[in-house]
Amino acid sequence: MAAVVLLVMIILPVWASRAQPYYLQVALNVLIFAVLALSWDLLARTGQLSLAHAAFYGLGGYTTTLLTTRAGVPIAAGILAGGIVAVVAAIALGMLTLRLRGIYFAIATLAFSETLRVITKQLRFTGGSAGLVAPPLLGGSLPAQYAVILGILLLAVLTSWQVSRSRWRYAFTAIRTNEEVAAVMGVNVVRFKVLAFAISAFFAGVTGAYYAHVFLFINPFEAYSLAVSVGALVAPIFGGLYTTIGPLLGATALRVGEEALRSTVRSGSQILYGLILAVVILYMPRGLLGVWASMVSRRARRAPGASTKGAS
Amino acid sequence: MVIFGVLRSGLYSLTSVGLALSVGVIGIVNFAHGEFLMLGAYLGYWLFVSYGVDPLLAIPIGAAVLFALGGVVYRVSIQRVLHAPELNQMLLTFGISIFLQNLAVILWTGDPRTAAVSYKARAIALGPFTVGFPQLVVFGLAMALTLGLYAVLGGSRIGKAMRAVAQSRLGASLLGIEVDRIYLLAFGLSTALAGTAGLMITLQLSTSPFIGLLYTLKAFSIIVIAGLGNINGVIYASLVLGLSEAFVEFYVPQGGGWAEGVFFVLILLVLMVRPRGLFR
Image 1: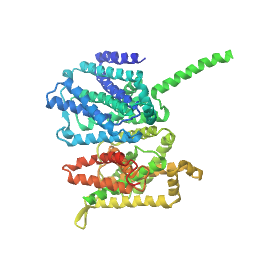
Image 2: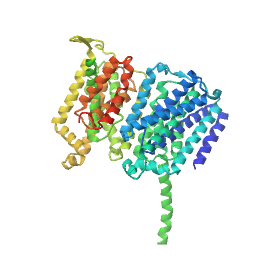
Image 3: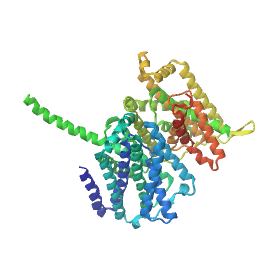
Image 4: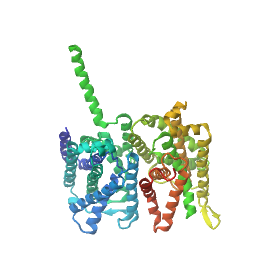
């Protein structure tokens, strides 16, 4: 099923771009968003609901921009460096917040992201509030850039899928359910929590770096924007947490919805995220996949019910 | 510098005490707290610009409106997640926060609005220092309201009921207290307080849809410093934050920007060193 979704995501935009390059641009945005969603979901599997995704995104973007413009580093290396810096930051933040649970953790991560934004705005080294300009990826060719993000997405999908298939899945779930019990059962809680944070941040950082080279410009307001963290959070929750398809579905639906909304409302299209988040929590806590699953099980229940009545 | 810090902490304690109430009595950390503050600020702006009503005079109106709004929000959404996992509650209020923030952007655009009250620039001499007149008034009013709240909580029947519910939901209901109604009242009160603080902010600074988040975070840091659910400690915790920010602003070069990060450092420090709060 996931393969079908992916195939659609690959083929559809290529076909659509022949008709309208705008669609390819939208698809590119969707893919960026999907990587963020997948990486957030990965971290959420350990029970850590982070609001710091924007921080890693921004760190990635700023790292690569600074390296490529000030140190003459090639773009590919810059993007990789963006990911690495994000990982380092994640490890630091992860260690700092080990003892924090639930809302404390969320607030600490949010505050981390906001503080990073303030700092970036203050320092002239990072361009202050005016931001920085970044060199274009692959000469600005949209299809080529699309291929790159597709590659990144595939990597993210593979990671997410692999984690849910391997023994890590049990560790993550145990930690998420009850850390103390998991520790007693022999799960190395610290290692997995920080590892999840690092992997998640890597993708966020790489994506942020990618973003810088595609949109050619970063500033503290956009790179560290709460919108990134919110989006990364709402998409998996909407689609279905702790799965691989869920974040993909959620990211696509939300991003497309936001683009559609943007044509009517000039700014504030983010309102969709708030609304969806509230609605999901109130009425469909397991997300779209949960709705799908309950529909399927209802249909399954009806079928055997008819035959067993006759049999007994 | 000390005076600055103290004045600032007055406003902070008003903004935070509502959140402390929500956390202490209902057990919900209202992520959207700052957004109610923002709505109060916009209400104050609108009343001033359309009818020339001074924001301070508009406080009773603002408080009533925000109380009603809080009640509605509570009934429609929060009441349903009272028994859900804490994370669901957090996500819900977070969603409400994003919703309200962007609603404001849609309705009123993202440009900041300022209410230029006539006495805005007036300053008063306090001994050897000059202090902004609006700041002083806001401080006085904020402190009065905060202390008034303490009086209500300590003295009145409803206040005592709230404290009972804060201590033990089960015990309070066994005593015949209608816990649901108390929750509704507490939440409404919490949003009313936030809105009132917002009105005061209109007086001093400009307002925009995005001010909510920062105040939510600062309020959160204050209640963490005070100890979650500790309503009485909010005044002291606000002093801590206010003074620390003032300190950074004055003694760190280019301090104005850095001061905005102080609350984060404080949160981390307190949670790592004394997670139960400094003023338990």
